[in-house]
Structure formats: structure tokens, C-alpha cells
Image (cartoon, rainbow over the protein chains, first blue to last red):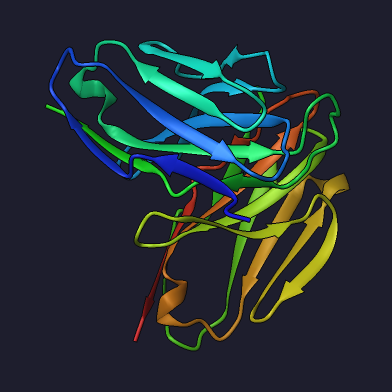
Length: 116
Length: 109
């Protein structure tokens, strides 16, 4: 089991460029999440997908779009990157789904994004 | 609103010392996890502990859901324990984890 994988590991963009961050999990989890972490700060939720076919906004969704491509994959797109989006982006997954009873959440290794 | 508060925010220890990190939360808990973010930025799962006590080597954790807190104990600390420790909880009817702001632990040789 690879767990949660993310690509790329590092990326540098110029202001206004677009890109898609990829995330995949092989644990048959229902729920997937995208977070950002700014220097010296905790994690803030951007978007999440409680189950295949659904997506919902988190705390900081502006400037981002997501796609739950299938049960395994959840991508995050920046349409027009801005310097304020310089951050480390983490994907996570959890068995979750329809049940409100929690299950352990696992994180990917992160993507370090710099927008010039 | 729903809150998860961690204390202390910063902790500096000498190698070999013991420590206790605290996490208070504001609602009934369905899931509580402790994570270690190492100096390379990786988030490592330490414990999934919505209630009770668990131990893993030098680390142990206790959650008292009725009193709305969880504790992480680190015994005989090592320099490799340095990093940020996050508590995260699935509270009330929420569908996503609420993270605390973390405890920055530095273990000196």
C-alpha cells in the first residue's frame, strides 16, 4: 500500500499561470481532503469530498477548484496562481463517508508550491 | 464555534526529559488524532484515540471525552522527537477534522 500519494513534490509558478495538483489513495477511502499550510501555521481546509461525486468548500476555497475524478483520485486546480497561494499543500483521506463516526485520517507527503 | 486548543504552544526539553502535551476541545468528539510533523514537513500519524488510553513505545495518549481533553505523553525524549505536534478532532456533527494550532517541541542534545 502506497497510502496517499501526491504529485508533484515541488512546483514554481509565475503569477497568472495555472496548474493541477494530483492526489491518489489506495486505501479504498470514501473521503478526501485538500489542506494548505503556511509557514509557522496549522492546516487550513480548502476543499473536501465526503464521497465520490461530491465536493464541498472548506475554510479557504477562494482561488481553487477541485475534481473528484473517481474514488481514488482528488485533484486541486489553481486557475490563475497568485503569490498568496505560495504554501505547502497536503492531501488526506479517511474512510469516513456517510458515517459520522470518525476513522483515522492519513496525509500525503505534501506539495511545496511557490508563486512568483 | 467548534474549537481545538493545544498547550503549550512551545516546549524546549533536554534529551531524556518527559513531557505532556494537552488538547482541549469544545464539543463531543467522534474522532481524535495526534500527529507529528517532523522537520521535513511530513505529517505522521501517532494515535487515533477518540477515547481511552493507548501506548506506542515511549509515546502514550489518553482521551477523556466526557471532560473534553486529550493528553500526549512523551517519555525519555530524543532529538528526533523535535517538530510540531498537532491534535485534530472530529467534533459534534462536523464532517471534517478541526486542527489545533500545534505544540512546537524542541529537544536539545
